[in-house]
Image (cartoon, rainbow, N blue to C red; front, side):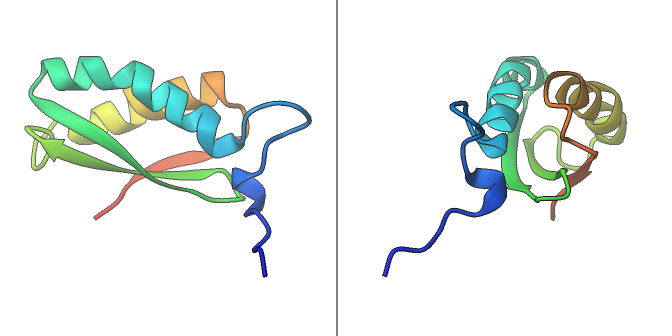
Length: 91
């Protein structure tokens, strides 16, 4: 039996899914993070608009990663994907 798509993963009326739209923004941000020796991975997008990302490389343990998360990543995601309510770092 085919499983129904998770609502946050289902395309909106003729458009990409919430997860796809979040991934596009993450992909646009990624080069700036990579320039500083780190990387960024999208882990989860919930129906409530919570986005979880995982830092890699130089971002792990960096004192500026919390600021990058809130000011850089969260602000960009909320601006480009209005359904995003919060961004958290995943373990």
